[in-house]
Every structure is written in C-alpha cells, then in structure tokens.
Length: 267
Ligand code: SF4
Image 1 (cartoon, rainbow, N blue to C red):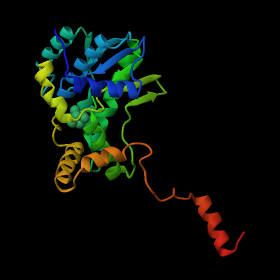
Image 2: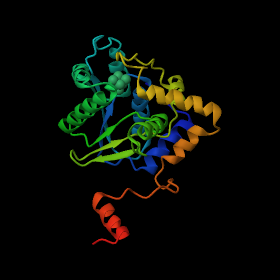
Image 3: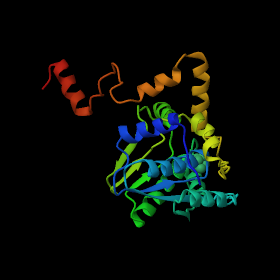
Image 4: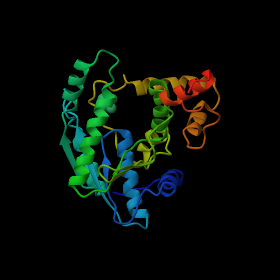
C-alpha cells in the first residue's frame, strides 16, 4: 500500500511528536483502534512516521469489542485488512463494557454518563494488553477538538480547568500515553479519507451521538457563530501558563480557624 500525507498534515503530526517528544528508539507502541475515522487516521499517520522518522520503533494495534447488543460490526474485518496493508500487527479483545454500563446505570440515581464507565474499562483493557505484549506506550487518536471539548466539560461538570495532555505518564503501570493527533482539527481528520481511502466503521454504541461530549461540541459550534475566535480562545486557555488573575486557593478548616481567631482576638 502506498501511503502519503500532504505537507500540512505531516507538519502537524511532526509538531506534536517533536514538541512533546513522543517517540524514541526502542519504543513499542500500542494503537487504540475503534475503526472510526480518528483511530484509522492515527494508524495511517503512525505508519507514515515509522517510515519517515529516524527512530526505530514498533507498532501494534488493538480493538476492544465493548459487546454492545448490536454486536461487533462485521465491517471490522475491513479494519483488520487495513492494518495488514499498513503492516501493523492487529488484535481484538472482548470486554463486557455494555454489561458494566448497565450495572452502573442500575446503581445510579440519575445523571449517569455511560462514557465514563466505558473509558475506564477501555483504558484498563488497553493497559493490560500493552503490558502483556511488551508495549511501553499507548497511542490514542484524540484530536484538538477532543481536548477543547474535554476542557469545557471539565469546567462545566467538575469545576476544574483541566483536559488530557499530549503525553501522560502512568506511574502505576510505567506506561506512557501519547496523542500524536493533538494538533489536528476534527474536520481535517474527516478530510483525510482522501489520503487513506478507508470508510470509517459505524459505531455499534447505542449512546453514540447522545453524549455530554456531543452537547459540548454543539455548544462550541453555536458560540463560535456568535463570539469570534471562541474555539481558538478555549484552545489558548487550556495551555499551562495561560491562566490570568484567579482567586487564591480556598483556605482549609485549620487556616480559617486560625484566621478567624486572629480577627476575633482569641488564641
Ligand atoms: S459514546 Fe459509547 S463507545 Fe463512545 S465512550 Fe460513550 S459509551 Fe463508549
């Protein structure tokens, strides 16, 4: 298979790899592959890096079957063939994420988001597979829109200014997570089908398109119509060092008590 990317795409990929020092000699990198547009492009981009970088590293790809009731799409066979063409060893594992979601939903008193359970089990399965197969890094296909949406969701739902980082070290497993597509906009990844030619496999997930993330995506798109550069401002705000003047951290109980006594003239 002849693989190619235009210079603009390759530059974006290199910007992430170089800025965050994602790949080193001897790395064995497990790719998380769902069969959707993002992960297919990730595999394609990593295969190109394997050719172009002066680094000696291995790739392996894994799909987790979450066992939703519509089953594992037969179309996943196309993914297997695509990985073969890219010369990336490929495996699938079954993880009963659908069952775990049903169980958690039953325990929840409302406002339950299946994606948290799903992500937790997927991460666990990826980590276990990576360790069992001698991989030291895991690459996910999260792109820039994902990071910005996560940043906004975190502010809205947990009151914290945070998002996932381009490289994360997992000290309990000694694995590194890398996100080589972190500078790509989602539309660029959609457009990349022109280069790799793979039609994404539709998600078997019943929650697809009805998630908190989808709401965040739509909200950003709406606000982008009204506020010039709204998306770009969110992207700048999620950089460390971007924080402007914020309130000081809240005092703890002891600090409050000491201050209170000082004010009231008591020891
Ligand atoms: S949309 Fe479905 S597959 Fe995606 S994270 Fe949520 S539960 Fe999992």
